[in-house]
Amino acid sequence: MTKVPGRLEVLAPRARSASAVRAPVLSVVVPCYNEAEVLPRFHARLRPVMEAVGDAWEVLYVNDGSRDGTLAAMLAIQEADPSRVSVLNLARNFGKEAALTAGLDHAAATGAVVVIDVDLQDPPEVIPDLVRAWREGFDVAYAQRRARAGESWTKRATAAAFYRVMERLGGKVRMPRDTGDFRLMSRRALDAMLTMRERHRFMKGLFAWVGFPSTPVPYDREPRAAGESKWNYWALWNLSIEGITSFTTVPLRVATYAGLATSALALLFGAWVVLKTIIYGNSVAGYPSIMAVMLFLGGVQLMTLGIIGEYLGRVFNEAKGRPIYIAERFLPRHAGAGPVARRAAASPEDAAGLAPPVHPAETT
Image 1 (cartoon, rainbow, N blue to C red):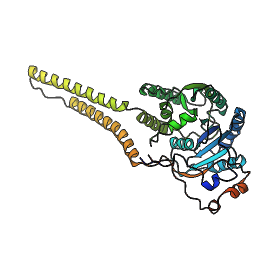
Image 2 (cartoon, rainbow, N blue to C red):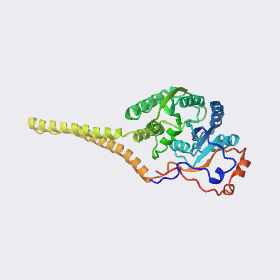
Image 3 (tube, rainbow, N blue to C red):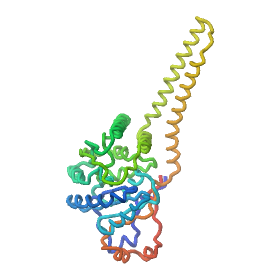
Image 4 (cartoon, rainbow, N blue to C red):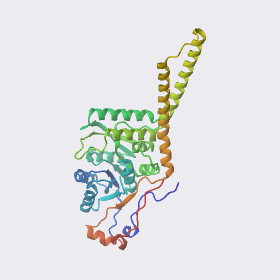
């Protein structure tokens, strides 16, 4: 395994400039994909909440290859609030789990990091409760949903079933029920989690795996403020498969037990056929029963091969050692008042558009 720096560093000339600012105590990481409509409303609600918390803070917006005006909206927000806002733009759409990892890699907080979605279903007003739990000594404060407004009965039922299945499959690792990515993690808990660099990432499972003292913070989930959800049922199904195969090997054991059970039934059926032939003679076997047995055994074999293939595909992807994400640019917060101050602080290479390329966070 080849290690390179775990997070993108600001270019050396800029890091030494007069616009450098002190590291914040709290970082808020917000992954975004096609969220131009809701982004300004989110920042308008986040800023007074974080100011009321009292600690130095930053917000890091991660653009996950959006095709609308999300990046432009991020840059406009940074232009209006340069000392608070950092922007990380990924080279393409890598998926939410990778975008969230990228944001956590680049969070500059010395105290704790908050993860939250931009759609305002997770209210920023809950963040002070998370910070309060952290100040009480908990390393992880996770927001646990009491209600899910604006969601269909089908989505609520399938989500509840998924969390309960994961709770049973987790073994020693207990993934809390009705809990998404919205949470606060202390710096030491975050650093521990960032040591895990697998390509197939199920962040809810990784959050739970690291352990550390944790506590729930109940809240009521609100309807999406604007835009459309990117999570249709097919995407949620794929996420559930990703979560199960990334978090546990129970499906492989189920396939093993199914094979053993099928073999035992086949052995009993064979013994019954032999005994029947000895007692009653060799009668002509029925075509329907033969076809039923063949189709049943074929289905079990294909299901088992499919489960093995899911895990084998993940081994293949991990063995290639590709980066989790690639950053197109990282624009950290700065103390300048606008683009003029920013250009004055930048190096000659930056001003000419010849800054050296950024590198991915790590290869696995």
